[in-house]
Image 1: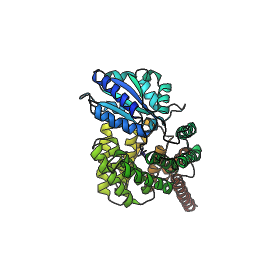
Image 2: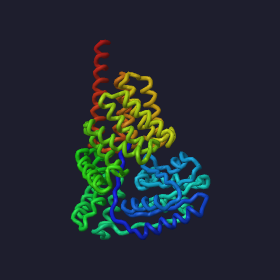
Image 3: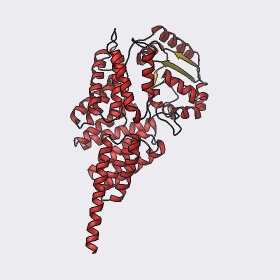
Image 4: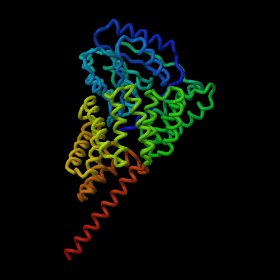
Length: 445
């Protein structure tokens, strides 16, 4: 399942936030039908302050829905929320979701909301999109019909922390717009340039710096440079624990990110401890029935399996699967990732028929939901190929590894650690096929 982006806080414009919350409060109190509003911020300080003020003022309970490239259809979340009691549904991480693109480089999220906008009439809740400036522009540009159904737009974006120059703002925007691995080194350079400026600024805004650490760590993790991403995630976690406390959703996300980076370096016990802490916080703050809680259940199950604790792993995989199927539906791409993990566990237990069935179902969901030109498909190809190899079905394994190499070279890059493992596997399969062919030729001669 995907890595997460943990984001922090910095400076805020309290007047703008107070005014936005007051206007939303009046709108929601005086409107019994559905409401769609946009709240536009520049960086995470404003988001956190707005949420705190909204929770204090609003007459409705708040249901927060976190979007992502894999979970970028807001109506999937809305469909899972009962019509009563009325709530405020708040969508966050819009920018992460906008990175999922169609073949003509348009955001998938925009297509979902534009085509399904009339479904808003069926939803009795107040819906708020909490979105950064550049994400707001993308929605307005690519989903104009949905955008025009809005009941209002509220700007809470203040100035960037010092040095708040136009140049720094442009660097941040340019870095956030880079989405392909071919330009990843440029993205790294831009974030490092920003860090160099903000780390020497007075007064020092540690939480904004922590946000930049996380963004840089995410890029390095994307490239498979796990030791470097680990160091940055550790810096992030230290700042968050000091400034936000150990029981905070951003701290839990940082724990999960650090756990992932450490797990990828095969340090399973350390990763387990981090996942356990993240799970405890998420269960307390988000509840058991939340996609982010299911994500850390999956990650904890993964390290249990790698430590040979098969029964414990299966229990957690099944818990996570049940939660996600209820919240997201059986055809969601996160379901595919979980099914693949559960299939691998059954393979290790010798339950080969169950394993193959789950692998195939996972691949079908992946193809229908996101297609096969992505990192998730590469992993599924590789996992099913490994299964076929262990079953002696070498031709099928070779075909899948060939597909993994083709897609992975475009999505991950040839230098990524996963691609090196896939290439090694392909060479082993081909060597085995050649060896069997040679034996067959000698036997027939």
